[in-house]
Image (cartoon, rainbow, N blue to C red; front, side):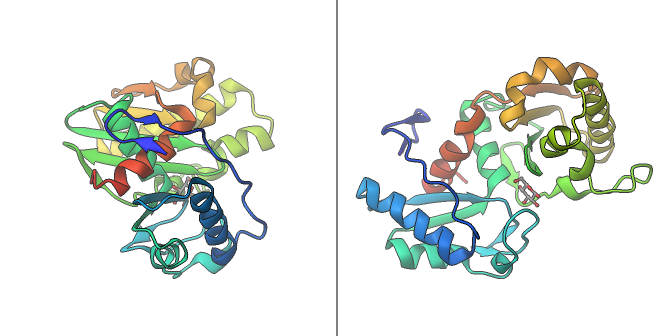
Length: 231
Ligand code: BGC
């Protein structure tokens, strides 16, 4: 649980492994187990690696296809009996970074990218979130593949790319993103952002580019903020 005034955890974190296959029913049951563990009755925020519109999951790039068109928010409300806010995972992480982290009260166009299995992306314009950005799936003419296929941390690990090779891929990617959106600040999150000194030096953009500050707590804190009505 999270104190949404300070961004701090008020309880220990309860972690339950993602069920396999991660169907909506199985994941919702897992969320319910967490709610039961805390004997919790208040508002719940949930981030999911998908486009979410009005509580309905629209895409499933890295999760079970049975999520597509699933009314996830309603399913979670019915299972837990609590009010639930379901949003894209990068959006919730970005909400936390903007409130308590590297983007604190930053004006203008602020973009947040989470480099992990996929590439999560989020954008604020003067503090307003533009939801469901999905820039992990943009295509660059000379790369001829989805950005996640050369710039995600999964690909770095899977292909054994050294930091320089991967850093140069990121450079091409972020220069393209910059040409499209002209952000003033780019925040890099995801577990690998802890090692930012090894790869951010290869990324040469006009925007200020900085590592996220909340690291793997951003998703939880941001989901709690969303549940508390931060949007
Ligand atoms: C999904 C996004 C998600 C990102 C990070 C992408 O594959 O399409 O919705 O935010 O991965 O998890």
